[in-house]
Amino acid sequence: MKRIRELREARSLTQEALAEFLSVSRSTLAKWEAGRHSPPAETLARLAVILCVSTDYLLGITDDPAPARPGPRALVTRARRRAPEAPAATDDAIEEAVRKRISEMPIEEFLRLQGAGDAVLEHVTMTHKAAEMVDKMRRAEDADELARKG
Image (cartoon, rainbow, N blue to C red; front, side, top):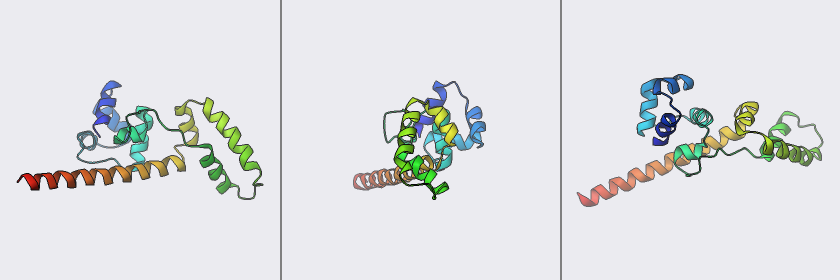
């Protein structure tokens, strides 16, 4: 999670200031930056929004820092859960209207309006779990290599 530090410093934020934004201690943030611990999924999502990057970028899964926008179908599915009685024929029309609107909307506004909705948090959770698995695999490979050398 060394990218957290790089991004924080590039934005001239102190550890204290970023920790305060996230409602965590400075030492917790320092552990994340050093890679000794990983932030919880919800905090990772907040970090991505604050630092204007994707969670995949923070986790080192991609080198593209651009935040991903949740798809229109996810928003239609979310709306369907809230109003199951609406005619199904409207789903395509809603999806098209949403697609047009979010393509024109800055990501920060979209996430604010959506409140980092269910689709984003689900994606972040899955991404976080994948990163943990990759980290465990790397540690196991490192241990195997040390055992072979030792």
